Length: 252
Image 1 (cartoon, rainbow, N blue to C red):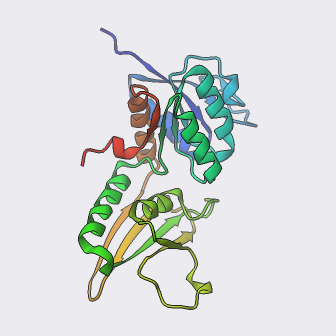
Image 2: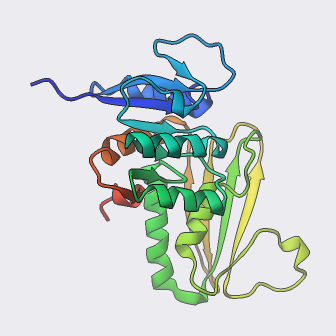
Image 3: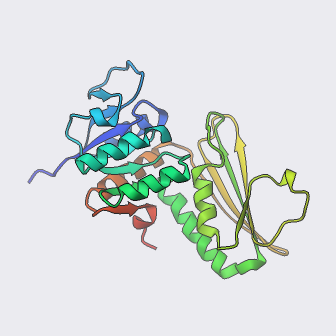
């Protein structure tokens, strides 16, 4: 029996990550890119290009989005009206947009993650375990490094890590140069570096008295995020309405 093909539309299909998703999809016999969403481009390709999600008129089981937060409204509207699943991989969403995603998930399944790497999300799970073991006697700092074209800071992944390690009274500190005081125990510091073509590095530091523990992930290729997005697309189309993330893909 012939395996059912998963029809994917890629939003931001001519961006760096969009192109990586297109390349990754070619490795999967059960995946077919039927269309793309891109504004202001004249590139030729083997599938139709739409300026907006609501123009889509090709078979579509799931939309994979690696564009920007500005595309979210039309993606949610289309997903809601057509009962289409979404894989949202963009970063920089506002709190209002996050609420929009949550509201839409009451009607359709949405996979939402700031980082599509299985290894990054495993690092976060390991760090959560380390925090439980080490307790409040260790200070937590996060360092993230990205290329000089990345517009949002801190990265969505750094914020995801901080959220995972935060408690009710945790204070996230982004700039110590304006504080002029010693570090409080309930702080998590986030430090951002932008330069060259660094694809993505994240380090979580647990600093104690006389010893330091760190977890670090280095992304050498965008392919790891594209592979995660394709796996997420296969995963989400089988799920009922709701919000899902990489934790739902990881057995731990």
